[in-house]
Amino acid sequence: MTQAQLKLVQHLQTQELDLHRLYRELQNVERAKMLVERDLVMSLLRTNQPC
Image 1 (cartoon, one colour):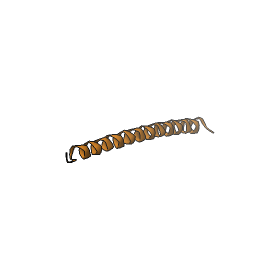
Image 2 (cartoon, rainbow, N blue to C red):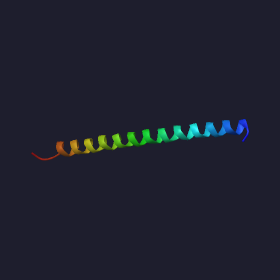
Image 3 (cartoon, rainbow, N blue to C red):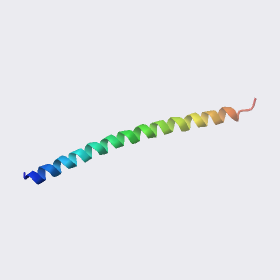
Image 4 (cartoon, rainbow, N blue to C red):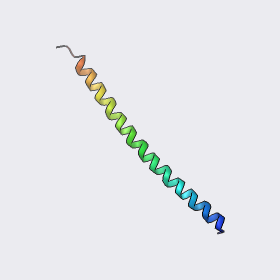
């Protein structure tokens, strides 16, 4: 491989690692969002229950 090709491969590997990191972060945010939505629904259900 030429030096330029090696540099390109390294760049692509770095981008792939960044993409995987961002995907994990997105999954964590989605998980947190789901928990907040669940808590909101549960709170609304408790608030609207007849006494």
